Each structure stands twice: as C-alpha cells, then as structure tokens.
Length: 442
Figure 1 (cartoon, helix red, strand yellow):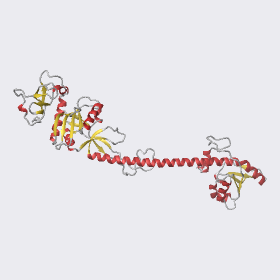
Figure 2: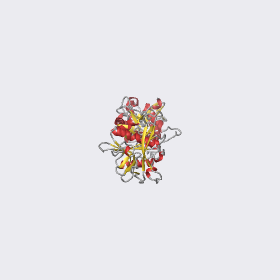
Figure 3: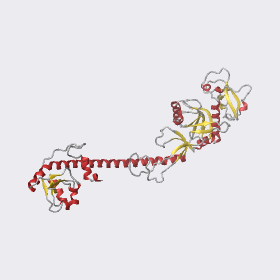
C-alpha cells in the first residue's frame, strides 16, 4: 500500500461528495455498493477530476477505508497532500471521537475561498461551533502554523493542532497538544499541552514579603501559584472535552514572567484560580507602587531635611569660627584676662563653643537655641554670644530669665561647599552633626 497517495474525500457522479471513512460515505449510501463494483463506480478526485477507487485495508485494530487515484493520475493537491499511516490513523481517531461526542465530523473541509483546509472539521449539533482538528505530523514553521491558525480565527473556526513529534517549537505558539501511541496499542494519549493551575497563598494574605523590590512594610500576597502539566490521559477524553466546551485554549498569564505567547488547554476551574491570582498580583503591584511613591517622598523629605540641617550646621560652624576672635577681645576687655576658646561646640554647652577664663567657663559662642532649654540652669551664669538679632532672639526665648545674651555683629562669608575632609584644626560637617546628636558618644 502506497501510504503517500491515500485520500479520503472524493466526488460521486450521482451522490456528490463522499467520505470514505464513514460507513454511509457521509451521504447515506452503502460502501458495499461501490466497493469493487463492476463497472467501476463513478468516483473522481475533487482536485484533479481523475478516477478514484475505494480501497479497504486492515492495520492493527483499524479497518481502513480510503480512496486511491487510478493509474497514471496527474499530480494534484489531493495527491500532494497524501498522508502517512500515522497521520491517517490520527485523523480517524479525531473524527471518531468527535462523532462519539455527538458532533458531526468531516474530512478535508475547505474554506470557500481556499484559504484553509481542515483535516477534520467537527461541527456541533446546533451548528454554532466548528472546530478544526488538525493532525500536524510533518515539520512546520511557527510563522506558517500561526498564520494558518489566524485564518481559522478570521473565519470563526476554533482549532487544535495535534502532533506526535518529540520536539515541536510551535506548541507554545498555537492551541495544540502532543500525542503518543502506547506500545501496547492502547488508546492514544495526550502527553503535553494540557495543564492545571496549582494555587499557593501566604498563610496571612495581608502580609507577604516575597519580592518586595525594596518596598518596606507589609504587602498583600499576590499569590505564588503556578501552572503544571497534567498526567497523560486518553485522546477521546480530550476531544470530548473540546466538544463539551469544558476545556479551552488559553494564553497563560501567571507567573508574570512567562512569555505571553504560551498557549495551553485548561478547564474553567483553573482559569478562575489563575484569575484570582492575576487580580491579587495586580492589587499587590498597585499597593507596592503606592508604598514606593510614599516612601520615595519620605526619603526625599529626609534628604531635604538632612541637607537643610547640614546647611544649618555649616552656617553654625561658620558663625562660631567668625565670632571666635571678636569674643576673645570682648572677654579680655571685660574680664581683664586672656580667655581660652574651645576647639568645637560640645553637647554640655548646647553645641556652642565654650570660652574659659582662668580655667573656668565664662561664655558660650553661638549655642543652639533648641538645646539651651535642657541646660538652662547650667548655662545661666555664662555669657551667651550670638551673631545676629534673629539668633539672639531664639536663644533668649529658651534661656533662663535675665540670661545675658550679647550680639557681636560680624560679616559672614557666603556658604562654602560642605567639606569632605578634615581641615587642620577643624572637624568635618558629618562629625559636627554626629556631635550635635550625641552620636559620637554611643
């Protein structure tokens, strides 16, 4: 038997289109009336018009009926589309299972404009659904099979591609499944293409720290479920599920990093489980965006406050440095002794620079007003120096009643860039900030 020239649909001179795989030839007639008939039945090819013969063969448990071109037939599309045994048997199975599900099934059904030809066209009893069941045993490119799938979709025809190839790169790109024939000649099995969704959630759905991407705080659980392949199951069950519309082709959406063109066959229940996770994932993303925005504003506010505080510290250091000489002269004329000025502002003097006369505290240069209150009694006997009226007013508001606060106006230089390194005889701004907050004592 030359498998390459088997065809299954032809044209009878009186009955019209016939399907050799159906006992009634798809037109209500008996096979026996044309099988080995004398004279030969008026059967011709729908493509080339050449005479055909009805052939009967057995192959394992299969009773095969097909049409063969008579000798010296020309090359035509029907012959070029001739099928191998595996292809033919799969088409037989697909049609048989669709019919067992209560649907009609015809071979080699072509579009009116010739844009597609279905191996098996299954049609629901009410005619509202048509599903092309395609046995794709030969190699085909992703581009071609995608284009063919799109042409079916444009015609309102659903499609499922079936293949027994070990590797088929297009399995992810179109609604398809992989099949295998068991060595014991048992029922054909679906081995790949159908999946189930396995949900997984945090015990507390309101608190999930998985992949927070630097966002602090509790985040709602977006779900940790995943798709997994189902165990092999019989082809007839799958075809019946397609006809019953209980399994549908679906582009997987979870996990989110899965490529968007991954097609799998799923049931409604698994769609709903995935949908729940999709919604939860979207809500988590929205909460993360909101928290990230709030935390970014908080960071920016802290950075602005830090910059403002650092600028204030720098300005304080400049005032203290600029006042050192005038204060020495002031205290020398007032106390009659040359004073000693501390190097830096220290917490014990409200971060002001202490001035000593004969080893005892006499004055403080530019104490921080906000720190004066806590040291009010200790600072009360000392003279406090300020560089401006505004600074004096702030210190007076926090100092002890009657506290002596002197102003020594000076001309301050413009703010200088914040020093990165320690200069001879001085401290860095960061060190000053640490001292002001008492961090150097921890």
